[in-house]
Length: 153
Image (tube, rainbow, N blue to C red; front, side, top):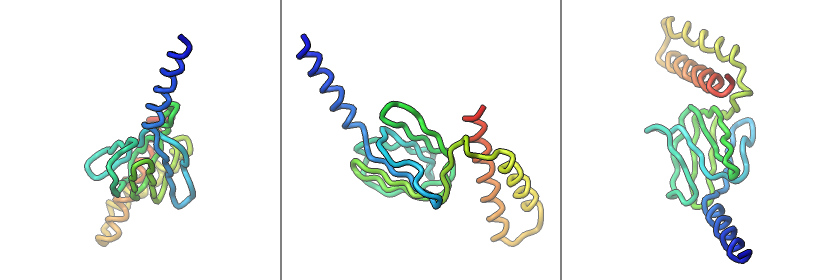
């Protein structure tokens, strides 16, 4: 009986290890996450992309939005991510982004002020370049506010 239980536990461990991959998430400020994961969900051009172990090898563009990492214990680690890229290999995923923040690290008041400044700049006459920068600032502020309020309420 004990031998059967050991075999079952061995099968479960093997299945779990097949679903785990090495994940490294880095930004300009340093390494955000470096460890094992079972899933990462990233904002990409056509919506959210979930990456699991054994995913097809590719490189994708990552857009600003909400990122979610699921660790081997099943815990979800949410974050706000800026523009960047992800390199996917069989058992390894590397994410490079300009910014990555945990929701609890976001200063909502400061993000709200940045949103108001960006909205005011959009109302003013600007060059195309300034207008585009103002739109990007507004999108970044909205994303930070939305993610912080979702996880910090």
